[in-house]
Figure 1: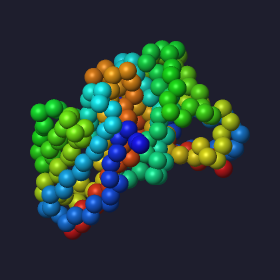
Figure 2: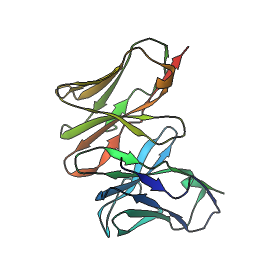
Figure 3: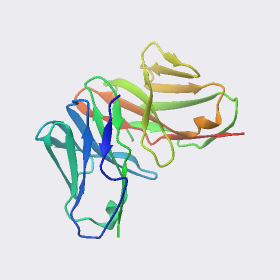
Figure 4: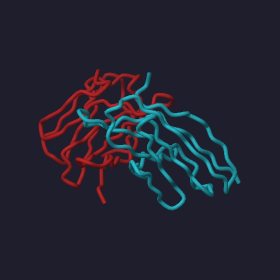
Length: 111
Length: 110
């Protein structure tokens, strides 16, 4: 089975901090994705990457950046955390013709 | 208009009932279709893919109607453990990311 691992399950950060969320997949998938999920808004795509060093903005990229230096690792960066970035963050990996496998999520609280 | 629309529910049904969810999608170029299940405070997990001819997996049946642009999920003999949010997901050419509906919440009651 594909495994997608997110480094932290729960995280509390202060406003203005730079925050790194890490995601690693073990199945050599080219495509990796970062979503946030909020009540009533569903899953919203922040950024995705289709190859090493390649990235594309999703639907809500403002306030975020990403890094993909190795195929298995896709990092989400909050440049200066704000309280409206308190959310559940989900990383996903995908092979060409199949659905996603998600990591278990990081619940981030910005205070 | 959202690209993928679902009735948010909740659907409250007794154990043993049959329940059906529909999902409509607006992009006629949509290619692949999935149902995901999400338990409270957990990540979504793939429940089943949806094929043009319809497909069944135990108590779950998924159907696709391309002409009317909707997919459905039927759950027979509901169990308490089926209580979750069911997410409708589509892909289409030219977009690598999947598009999610907001989900339909199911609560199966004893």
